[in-house]
Image 1: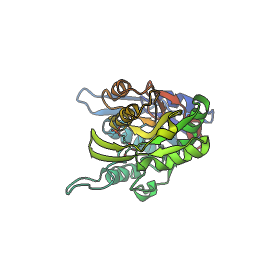
Image 2: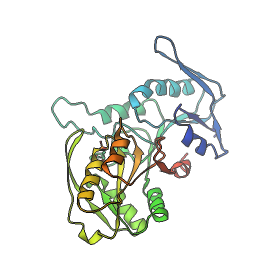
Image 3: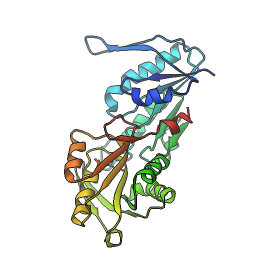
Image 4: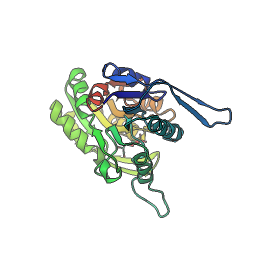
Length: 290
Ligand code: R5P
């Protein structure tokens, strides 16, 4: 089946890397807003009978969802055999239960919306914690690709004598995998979240690692509070050279500047979301699943 890729505006850096695979035909289109704010979309490439991959990383998802649904349904209307969402960053994975009475479990609502407009979903390192598999909430075939091998490759190539730190229990799966791949020792911190920008971290005694470089690895940096708190406590414990690595560079507001100011020596991310901190490529791994 012919494979086409429609690159949602803003996803060009990773889209261009994926297009190095000559089997993928780029889909040309016009997307704009009418003066009243409604969306206009027009396909300019023949896609009849094709598998259409729509590449759209879902940070700031609210603005993207309606145009994305129009794209998917228009591809179907013009004969796409199947329409697959390729979302290097998958949003709405964190509100996965009602923590207080009356709260919306947005993970489930969002997943049923995506499932009703796409035939498949491919993503990188979705935030799986209480929900152990995407298939628990998505009714379409899904592929969740681990970023751990790419992060491990970067650490091996760029760090000497590192020890890995997972900021909370949720980080255990990827920290353990990166530790196995790099041979670096690791510790997992205890985190208590009290609010969006209010957390408490418990750091164990790290004296045995005093000659190592601490490398914090998390799936997402959003407000940056988790990394900032960890960096501050590591500095208090006597570490000066502290590296922060995240798969998804969400960085809300001035989070990146605040994390630098807190004392992170290097802030590194994968290119699931375009950002100045992108140093680790996931396009090659992603390309194998398209
Ligand atoms: C926790 O559930 C996640 O793995 C991250 O630790 C968290 O999302 C980071 O968010 P923030 O940067 O706002 O602390």
